[in-house]
Length: 170
Image 1 (cartoon, rainbow, N blue to C red):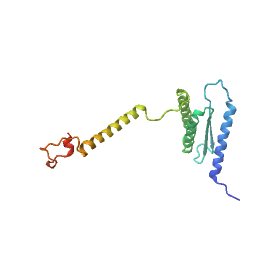
Image 2: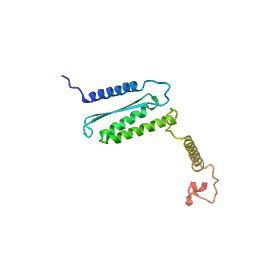
Image 3: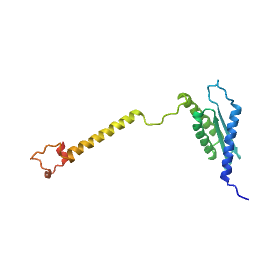
Image 4: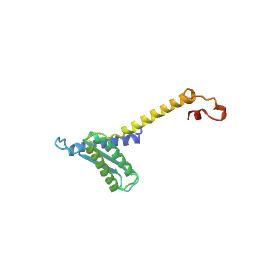
């Protein structure tokens, strides 16, 4: 007999649990086009006793809104980790409710758009201006100091007198 890998069994259990949450969501929240609020189903299953450190938690969150599914996946994994680390069940449920509330609030505030986490335009413009100023300063320095074209040489000041080329520029 071949020995079945434990990780494979856990993976099958996880995907079966996700499908169960999805089907349970479809049964409890039928498709209704008149409803403007998102429905969210969160299901937590603990395989073992609540205070047992060997328990295997399964947390599944499903919604019909495609815009927040990624955030809900992160929330489910955070809750799963919290339960695996031994957090009390009521604190984990509080965190799930808070996180889902924040995700739904962001969905409605942004009208379904994703939040832009990029550098603002004013910072890009400031960087471009600073970059251009540095390039201009390097070109001026190269032109005046290195090439000695912009400085009028006087017979009185000798380079050997302790003055550098940069002092001649100023």
